[in-house]
Structures are given as structure tokens and as C-alpha cells.
Length: 366
Length: 125
Image (spheres, rainbow over the protein chains, first blue to last red):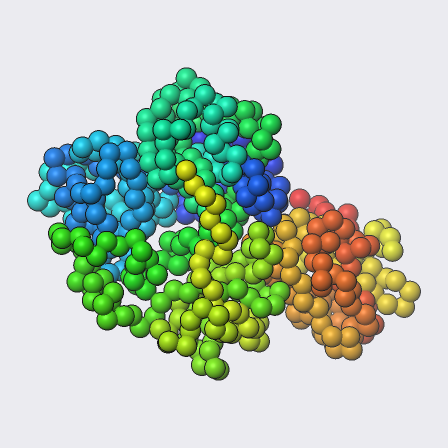
């Protein structure tokens, strides 16, 4: 059965177009994807992302356990800090990508993809042997709101939250509008912003309150459609499109997120370290179309009339006015930034230029 | 052009007679369902298509779709302005948002399965 978030009625009342996404009935757009996209780039938007999974990891060995299942250095993660991680298999393929937040000495919060919660939980169970660790899937008890955009800070202040103490990629317990929340300064849009973890029964009140307080800043509710164009402009991967069980973090151009000095062993370490030193056969690139055509997931990529890979994500980029995309290609030295590749669209090849990600400049962050 | 003379297909194209030609466009329902339209590809003038054949391609932010010929005919005119500004379709699907004008082969026979705008509205809503 398709699940509904605790804000389902609000979305319908706001006139949202609803779609099934990862087993959830979710708003894809309220008014227009482009308008919603621009709202987040220019002002501030609020997203209901309650479909995402929340898993609490506690216990004496929680740090060691997490260190075994992700390539990132969890033992070096400081209190209240967050880190972008991948859940790797022995062969380097990815079960999921997620953010791990450190809540206490032996206490962590994992926020993972809605489509992968069950796989993640199974994976944790498979890997917990020998670790004194408690895995608590709280996805059904919590709702998650994302407040994103350059005016997110002002809005949070307006709601009585002092953000001066909270830097990017951190999490803090807080009391806002009388509610006990976890406030993370993270997001999936390339903008500054916050993610508010709240118990289901309070989310309706919080949602309405944020919309009310945000009115003067031009706040709008934002659907999954704009969430996708925002994340792609920011060069962020989407699990299921750009990442899956066959892609390694090295192929996915996520080397920046992998510490090469991590001492302890973790799932897939051997493959990942070998790929870093010896190189990979295929790798993820970003590209910008040279005409108005739009590359979509699954389209073939060509170079010199040879098929060299496939598009994994593609869309119009409202911020740049160009059409952008991500795809995996054969790791040829000619395919560098500035190189011209071709995308097969409706039986015709269309030129695209290989570019560095992100597709938009990152704003200065606190 | 009058909306009362419009005939609509199940795949959301409309035709309306304009002099000796037929204007083809996309219904308001189709445009609304597509959302922000960002790309339009129209056929060449003079090309011929049978009923049901893909003659144009349209893309919204979300997805790519094909547009089918509601009746057979030869493309007499295309709405070129719309290729450069496909977003105009979101504002005006009828008079300002027509796609092509065609010389129909046998409009009467081909129109048998098309619906009046009123019947179409009932069908999609």
C-alpha cells in the first residue's frame, strides 16, 4: 500500500500534484517546478521530506559498527557534526547513500533514502554480528521538513532560533515554537538551509507555522520536481539514478568524500583503495547540452561515433537556463572538462560539453 | 477559431477547422498535466503523417512526451515562434498555443472517434 506523510491533507489542500515515489504518495509540484525552483534559489522554500528514513544507532560499539559499513571516518566525527556517507558492499557497490549525524558519544542518527530504508535495515542487521549495537528504525514515528534557500537563516531567526551557534553540517536538539526538534543544517538543494526532525503528531503545526512565519520572505511549499532540479544543479547524486549496487564511490566521482587515511577495515575498502590508485573503467561526468534538447535518464552517450555510456540524470536547469545532466562514461583521457560528447535523443546525436560539477556556484556558507 | 468547433482525441490533441485547413494543438488538460513546458519539436512543412503517428515531441521539466496526429494529413504551417518559447503553451493552449496547421486527407472519416470538447472534459475529469 502507498504510504502518506502526516502532511498529506495539507498538500492536497495546497493543490499539489501528487505522485507515487518510493512507495509514498508525495507532492511533485504545487504550482510550477520552475517557480518553486527559483523560490529556493532566491528566497526560501519548505519541503515535506517525511518519506526519508530515520534510523538511530546506539550502543557501546556504535562507532566501530558504523566505521565498518561506510568508507568515512566515523571515529573522527565530532559531537553534533554530520558527514555524507555511502553504505558500501564488499565489491564497492552501494546499498545507499546517507548522512550520519553524531548525537552523542555512542549515539548516531542516520537519514537515508526512502526507497532504501528496508534494504539499509537488512544490511545493518547483516553487518551487526559481533557489535554491541542497537538499530532503531524510527522512520514511521518522525517527519522531516527541509527549509532551504538564502533566506532560511532569517526565517529560522524569525522563529526564535539562534543559528549563530550552528554551522553547516551540524545537528542540534532545539526547542522551536514550543516543539522539541532536532535541527540539522543540511539539505539537498545546494543552498544554505535546515532540516527539522519532528515527531509526526507535531508536524502539521510546524509546517503551518513555518509557512506563516515565512510569508514575508516569500516562502513557498516545494515539491519533489524542484527538489530534483535543485539537487542536480548542485551536482548531487540521486540514489537509484546516479548510484546503485553496481556503482562504486570512485566511479561515482565521490573520492572527495572518502578519507584515504582511514585505518580500520570497512566493507569494500580493498576495491575502493585499488580503484583510487589504479583508476576505474567508467566514471561519472557532468555535462551541459549545447542545444535545447534535454538528456534524460537512460539515454546513450557517444564520443567519436562510439557508444561510451549512459545518462543517469538530466533536466533543464532553471538557474543557468541550460540543460544539464550526469552520466557514466568509459574512462577515456579525452573525456575531460570542455570535451564535446554526444547524447542520443530520439535517434539523433546532440552535442554536449563535459563540465565540472556543481553546475552552479556554491554560495558562501557560514 | 471557436472552442465549440473543437474535436479532441483520447491522447489529448485537439483539431479545429480554420478555413480550408485544420489547426492541431494540445488540450488544456494535457498542458496542465505536463506542467512547465520547456521544449518543443515540430515537423517540417510538407511532411505527411497518418492518424495516430507521432508528429511532434514536447518536454516539460518532468518528462518527454510524444504528440500524435488526431487525423491524417500534410503539414501546411508550423507555429515557429513556439519552438523558441515553448513556455507560452502554459499561458495559452488554444489560440496562441496552436502547434501546426494541416491539409487533411479525409477529416470526416478520421474524426469519427474524436470527441467534442465537452465530452472530452467529462472523459478526463
